[in-house]
Image (cartoon, rainbow, N blue to C red):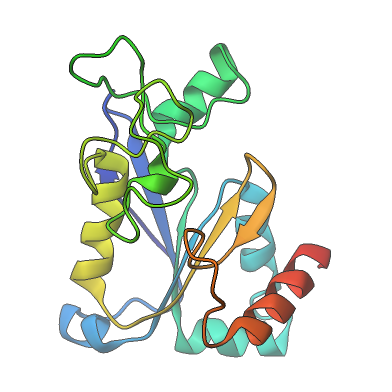
Length: 191
């Protein structure tokens, strides 16, 4: 396995990624299939590493895919939940012209930016930020995705509401593979 920081945070904490699977040369890696999972629980990492070689199906997956796990994608906010406010969900960045702190990283992406469910009020828990990808935590993930390409899946496990979510939260119409995604997410939460 390979560990590296794709980005950081406003306070200098690292967004740590772990690569599981075969490590290829740069030319091979760019074309290699990638599954990227953002997680907030080390139990998933432990299960993945213990099941390799024991579970034939899982071993076959790891032999053909590189899986990147981001253990904590909002390290400043995560640290703040342990020192001050257990239910904090935003980053810890400062917004010019406001005394309120942070941006909701889930609403800072350049996908449906500023649409339903997001707020332009810096004091709101769902404040989307000044512009899409303005937060270093979000930008580091965007850069990672752009640099690596050929990503087959992106799963985000939310500890805040204990949800397994899939795109797109800002839309009400079903995605083309809605039934399959529903079945997979229900199976994952009960596993």
